[in-house]
Length: 181
Image 1 (cartoon, helix red, strand yellow):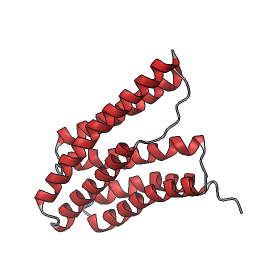
Image 2: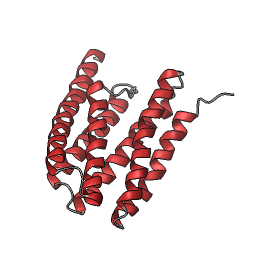
Image 3: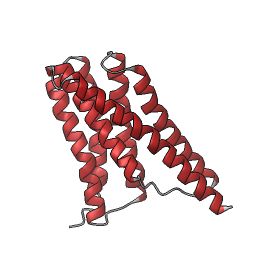
Image 4: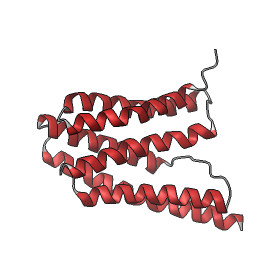
């Protein structure tokens, strides 16, 4: 049986989880929202593992996986900022990085050559820290744990990786574009 479609199905599943997570957060049902969020976060690692382990790569999957990540993270950041659970400035930095990456990838794709979406190590670390940060914020909002200092430290680490990974993407694409000319 050919299961090459499985990583893409997992990414689609992650996208499908976004609306219920957001609805549950707005209804103060952090218990179920956290469960679904952990499932979505786990699915992010699982689809990448399966694609790499069994060479189930596809152009569609290379584009779908980061879209699923950005929807999950971006929408959750925005909602939690609107609910005053996290600072607006932090949400702005996270969303701005994603806009720069998506915009840069689109420009590169149309004006240089088709882009191969391969996340860097710092980008993978950034995604993991963003997911963990959101998990901690939702846990604190719903259950009063962990302590605020944990969220502050994790938020600072997230900011650092957001900035470094954003610069890394812009730098890498600029160097690749220069080599093409």
